[in-house]
Image (cartoon, rainbow, N blue to C red):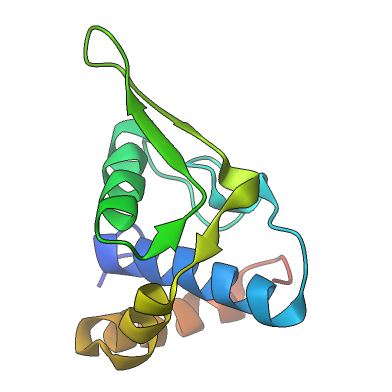
Length: 114
């Protein structure tokens, strides 16, 4: 699995939101941004991931708006929360567990603490 694989990015977002929820800390929008601290991917791919996570009800508080001319925007990253469905997906999905194993290896070599 690659660092920018869909499931790896979804795992990173959900695990960050779950940890923030359990610790009672504010969500840092820069952690969830396409060019943020957790990952660096192109904006179109990021929009696709966020839109699907909202549509699949894995996260709430984020608004994905298709503006006139089909331009998609995202707002409310600071209000993002993992949903119970997102927690279930994070804990029980076999593909996401493989993403966890990959991300765990990546986190060991990252220069930042999460």
